[in-house]
Amino acid sequence: MRKAKDNSLVPRRYFRPGFSHCPKCSAPLTRHATVQKKVLITLEGRFRLISLGYRCSRKRCPNARVVFVSPEPARLSLKGLSFGFDVIVQIGWWRFWEHRTLDEIWELAQRRFPISRRQVLYLIVDFLCLLKAAQPARIAAHGATYNRHGLRLSIDAMQPEKGNDVLYVVRELRSGLTLQAAKLSNQRAETIRAQVLEPIRALGFTVRAIVSDAEDAIHRACQEVWPGCPHQACHFHALREAGKPIAAADQTMMVKIKRDLRLKLKPVRRAIEALDEQDPHRSVLLDYAEALRSSLRVSSLPPFQLGGRRVFEDLRAVAASLRRCQKKESSPVGRFARCRNGLPQLLGGREPHSPSIGLGDRIGTLAAHRR
Image (cartoon, rainbow, N blue to C red; front, side, top):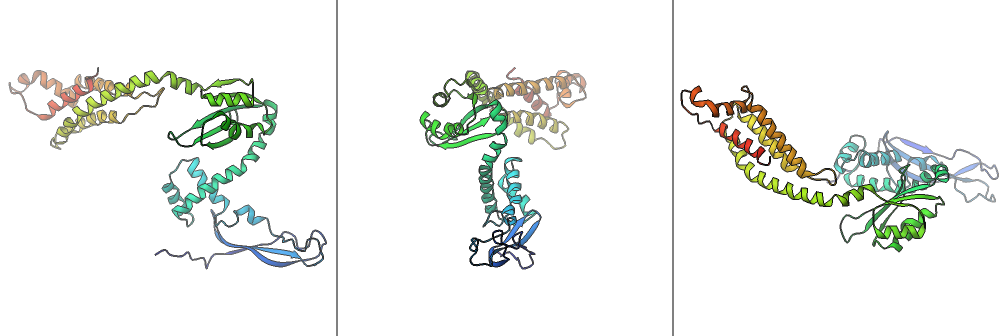
């Protein structure tokens, strides 16, 4: 059963107007009603916020029906919300700047003030709403620069899955400020022009240049709104398209290497784990097996981070390490190789039957099978 919060010992803070006489007729103000009364949670602690409203005592005063209140409660929190602006900003910082998960934010918040997991989600939405509401002020702060140098726009579209709505984001390149973001149900040039580009033109700044991907609808919409404006294709998108054949070939190679490696590595690893724990070679062989196993978790991020090439380089590094170890008599792998070459002379003509020797050779074969 959910336990109710105990607010009986929470201190009270009263908020009244900063003046005691009517600004219109100078008559004294009288208390009219309690405008707000709630328990407010801030980073500094909890307190009961009580905002009192006052009216002019003269009934014939033009301000007789005006309720005067203190502006301080509006600076502390949104009306009807039990959390202060400092809490909302802190949660927004954890989520979007430190990139913490919902559960991490909830755990950190519970150390400082009482809050539920669901409420954390609500406060994240409130933070985004505050950012949206502050956007005009942020644009106005850069207004002098934009008037002098104009805008250089970056337009990008993000679609999680085909058939879903598309999010269009327009940023100013030099300041990094987001000027417009809109979720569209279609990608027609008319829709992009009306809901994405027209609000930017309404700001009144001169657009000097535009950068976007090669989407035809974006190009046509931009030319309709700003005819003759230089429009350049994004280098990242161009490189990604140019590198698709290479990325496809690399993906094919990576899948083939991983398939061969996975089939051969499993029995080797099981055999190593079956060795006696007192065997001095067991830990070394496990390290090599784990190095090969880590290659199976490599992925690609084209156009520059190619998984197949990385897997190939990792296997080549393991093979080189094995070759270096084989030249050192002090290392376990080196002793494997030495024993295989001269065991009859060293041990009186008898070949030892240590299973770790054969496993060391099998790992070397796995690492070098793509050389």
